[in-house]
Image (cartoon, rainbow, N blue to C red; front, side, top):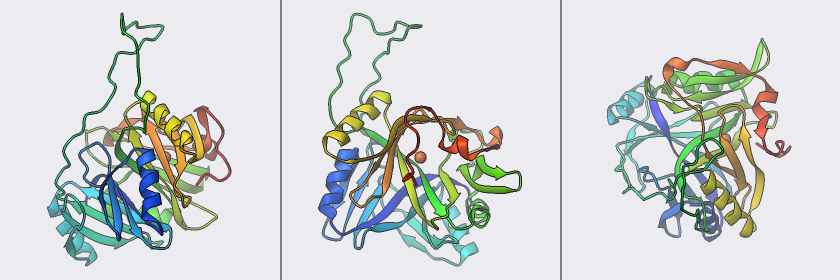
Length: 306
Ligand SMILES: [Fe+2]
């Protein structure tokens, strides 16, 4: 077993790369490679790749996870009998390609060259009733897309939760944060975080949910700079006539403020901010389907979600 440290990217196919590019730019990603074969986009953080679209029939084409060291890729390669190959994308590095029990492509990358950092907006003091922090100074925000910092998690619909859970945990070291139990004997999914020891990490990097619709892509979620940045991005996507799926609201499990949108072919991408961070020692909980779909504020989940 290796321990992945984060999700790296999601991969799609689309028949019109120009349309996908326009959507990604409204969403707040930065296109770093565009040709007649594919477009590659990054966020503003150091990850050189965050979203890949290849020309083809529309669909989900897999997730990428990131290992801390190339040595871990060699270990995975030996255990799985899958070769270590050069990763053909900006930032380079190496990749081992696997398929999960439902046939979803899972690429594990390491050794990518980080992208140059981009400056993030915001950071101005915020006035609340408790703390008056911004004095003798106006707040003025620049309209435009959200400043997406990084890909934070992906959600996959699976045909058999326990089989997929075992597959991902035994290879990549995921830890359950919240397991979704319909009864004490029957669980249908789990929010899983990376095992980064004492380093706090997102409440979930991967969420697997057994779906009556069968296996497939549920959504991928990108962290934005802060709440204002999320709302500016909402305005931009709404003004551009994009398809809002669900939001704005605050989740119960993971606690994020969320905002879900669909790409031109119906794949759901999420903006989020202010999520929970836990260490490996923080343990696991069980929760209900009501907790999963529940919000602390905001609209109820639409029936189309996921
Ligand atoms: Fe999400």
